[in-house]
Length: 436
Image (tube, rainbow, N blue to C red; front, side, top):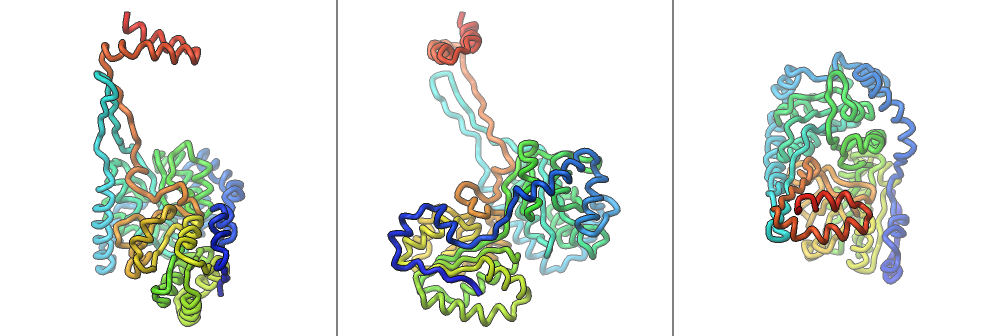
């Protein structure tokens, strides 16, 4: 069902390999955003030129639905919440509460530093004015992604939020009702029935229905990622999210039933999902394969899971946890689970992961829904340089500089020296004119 990579006995070689070389040996779905750029460029240009009409045409072409209007009526939002299963409403309410606690703690107070007598620099974090939040809706509905996008934007102090989500084929041209209900629960009244590259372009360029935004966040397919790359610079973006992925670092103490269940849970997202088990125990690897053999045939999304595990699934056997940590750090998973002895101590050594789940009772679905952490995370190895969605994505750092006449005069000779070195004498004069 999945490939088996035996790295035992070559610990020294593993330690000598570069992270890039380790990544090349491990499975991960290839998503060619560059190729998708050729597809999305004319779509984005059309939306720029024709506005709403282009978004509606593209939605009909790609989603098979033509909404009566792009903006979802307020009555539809209210009706969706009224009809929501009380158990789902309760779970969303608790997810929102927990997410607010975590993201509110990310807010930063202004910091003032006196660099010299009479000269200060104050660092302020200022929210952007307007954001566009993408909520996917391809195979399934993701009300949890509404929470993960909206809560940090609200906690950051953003005043204007627009949510976009593809129309649901069974919903009269509207996004899925549970997505609409989540928006209503969060107090978001600006929601659009649009997905794909056309929705990203609508947010970036603005149309008759939807004013342009400053920042776009949220996960999507390769075409959404390509549109974000194309329009980066016109707007800020969070990341180019690709297929979801999990790495599990485990030793002999891990429960094979837990490990198998966690792999299947990630694989059911997408046939392109990547699932990697790195373990010091051949016995655990064998036991997990047995569990997969029992569980995969009876899981609801069997075909999707089988395609994921056979395409991007692997177990890598390593000599020890040091080698295992080097492997998972190089792979830089979106989600990394640590199921070992002294799991917290092992997790503290991890450098590269979107989110780390510690021990046997912190599975990834906890983070997907109710841990309070954010599940919009870097994929495709980008966790080596990128972070998950947070309050900072919706704020800008601004430095405020203050200086007295005396302090400027004191530093003027050094400014003159640097200005002359760069042949920018008007810079020097702009200082000296204040000191004469």
